[in-house]
Length: 220
Image 1 (cartoon, helix red, strand yellow):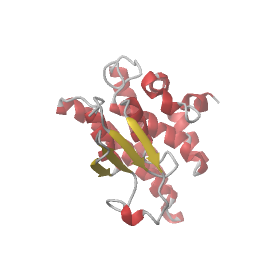
Image 2 (cartoon, rainbow, N blue to C red):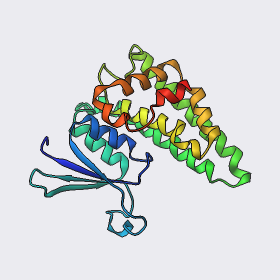
Image 3 (cartoon, rainbow, N blue to C red):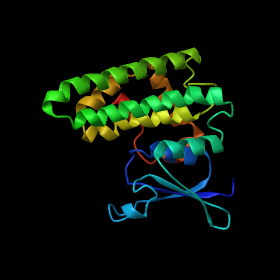
């Protein structure tokens, strides 16, 4: 697998691909990124959507084409050791990751809601976010508040959590200053520690350096 190279197709934005970018960087593999013309390139994607990950062998032949962001994340995390081989231990990380998806989905649903549904859906988003912060913080505390969800090394869920909070606090700011401020104010000391530890990890340095850090946004 060390001779494989990858191409990530996605828009020039964090969106659904920041965890993928961080995993590729942490895995120390050769990878590049393409930004297809959209919607012109839509029919050329496996399911008509992005992101898409293309894996090539040492002789530059296409080995694998994957779509769906979380599928891509888990493939990379398993392949390069950021998810444990033990399925029970892996499931503990995956359940936290899947909750991030629920919160992001609720964020977009409340944004596009009609006036009569808006208040109800905003409340639902806030409840999901609050529960996610509560559960994540407890798992971090149970791991001695060392900045990792499990163990003492960078894992899939550490990376996914970092990308999740960075998206809601930084990338979503143009969509909703209110939501960005709400998420920022909800962070616990355990989550602040996680963010600092992830951003300081040498494995992620190249990708983290491409934009303003989340830690700097939180201290502003």
